[in-house]
Image 1 (cartoon, rainbow, N blue to C red):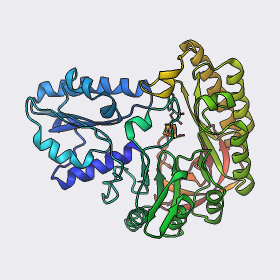
Image 2: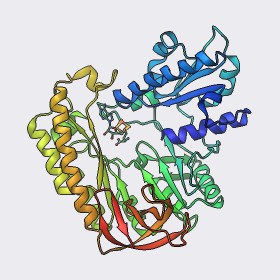
Image 3: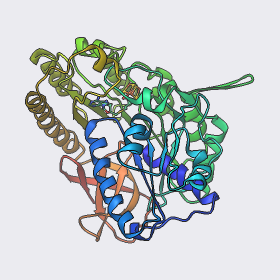
Image 4: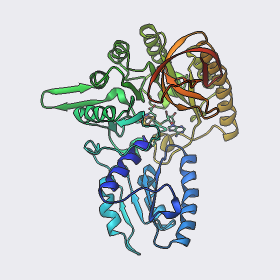
Amino acid sequence: MNVNDTEVIFSILADAGYARTEEMDQADLVMANTCSIRDNAEQRIWGRLEVFNQLRKKNPALLVGIVGCMAERLKDKLLDTHKVDLVAGPDAYRSLPRMLEAIGPDSPQIDVLLSREETYADITPVRTDKNGISAFISIMRGCNNVCSYCVVPYTRGAERSRDAHSIVREACDVYQRGYKEVTLLGQNVDSYLWKSGTETVDFAGLLERVAEIAPDLRVRFATSHPKDISDEVIFTMAAHPNICKHIHLPVQSGSSRMLEKMRRKYDRAWYLERVAKIRSVMPECGLTTDVIAGFCSETLEDHTDTLSLMEEVGFDWAFMFAYSERPGTLAQRNYPDDVPSAEKNRRLNEIITLQNRKSLERYRAQIGKTLEVLVEGPSKRNPEQLCGRASNNMMCVFPALDRKAGSYVCVKVVDATSATLICE
Ligand code: SAH
Ligand code: SF4
């Protein structure tokens, strides 16, 4: 999501006459696009600011800006203690050229107002991907859920769905420029809903419209919410071969008590039913997840519920985190962060060990299968090999022969690690 926001910023700045440099010490302006989701994401930015300040010693005219969620959350500290020249929240990017013009020696610029409407629908992002094959398209901004641990609703504001026609136009445009895959992005894509006059488009409808652009344009999406993913979305995926068979379905915890406290609005049984439905309609569908270890008051029994759910579902892979208390969230205001950090990390390690075993099992289960892969480019480890993803999102490596990036190839899986399928 932040990569896509950066692409929107590049586009706005390019229209205002700015050009991008890959060499930081040649820049007249450096900006960091920031994330507040966990404390360690924020800690990294304080370190970056030190680097920018070193650059400023060499080039006193250098302007330094912080954009994104941290700008929203920590504007005062950024301006007062860290002396940045510009602070712009996620809904303020259109104002960047005006703000940059207005910066003076004692007048830093700040705009962290959140909007109920801004979706940057009419802005064509400047793609920052290197391969020209896979593009991110933002379909909505903000979030209307109030998961008790999460800072997103505070830093990115209320949920807004983007004009469906502008999404389809952007997908057509990237396809015409040679891209072969689009990933539709939102915090909760299943609650996408756009209305105009008599026209109403929900997520299943949007998926269908994008899938119908061209049979060789792959469609992916993230993130799905277990409480909102509908049968209609599942059936729409199944009906279109070019909608990739992969769902990122963050579970967060396997304990219904924790899920209630997290305000996820589903319980363990509901989650397992959604997984069963997905697998009954699309047996080959890849499933990945997010898990939080050591949320407030989590007992060993709750933790064991998470392990047993992961064992039962068998995710292909997962993002796994220790709970990080975020200022201003419901959890921070109402519940003590009472699992000691050593214990959180112990539980997290148990979760990671289990997931590594499951990933290996899931990847090895592909051995012998033939999969269609979209070639992305040379494999990082061995330039004589190519790499690309199968529909289920598993990364495949295979001999290059004369295949080109951006083409589709059928490969046979001959071996597997817990993160890569080795293919012929
Ligand atoms: N909108 C998506 C995910 C958004 S954030 C969803 O609802 O699933 C990405 C992931 O970061 C979350 O799924 C969660 O696992 C993790 N996360 C969010 N807040 C966190 C916190 N305070 N501590 C640890 N992990 C957190
Ligand atoms: Fe955060 Fe929950 Fe919204 Fe995801 S759905 S962004 S976890 S509040």
